[in-house]
Image 1: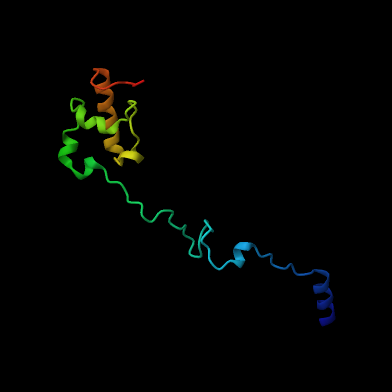
Image 2: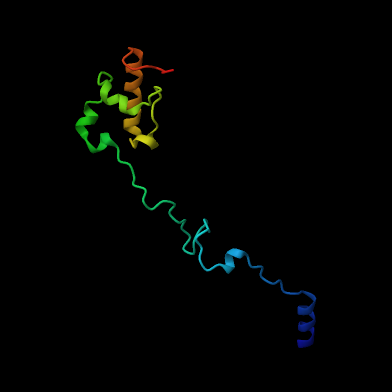
Amino acid sequence: MSEENNDIQQDYPVKEKIYNKRDEDDDDKNFRGKDGEGKYPKKNAKYKRKVCKFCADKTLAATLDYKRVDMIERFITNRGKILPRRITGTCAKHQRQLVREIKKARSISLLPFRVI
């Protein structure tokens, strides 16, 4: 029987493991996938999460109004476009309020729709 097992093993050769350059390198600085723990490495450790100005200061949120053009102007570009949440750091709730007030101010021409 042992001779038969040897014959079977010889018929089916064992595949050798193919090593990539990544396997040869000890330092995984260029490797951007998952590490051994199954977590992705942080892209920028210095990144600081933005905090919503209106959530931090409740009085500022209460005074959010279309008539306060000086405050609303901080949330539009010099071309008149509304800045997105990821840039300003506002939360979704206050971004919706802010957009509503900007559109009101535009409709009564306190703010421009578009600057050419």
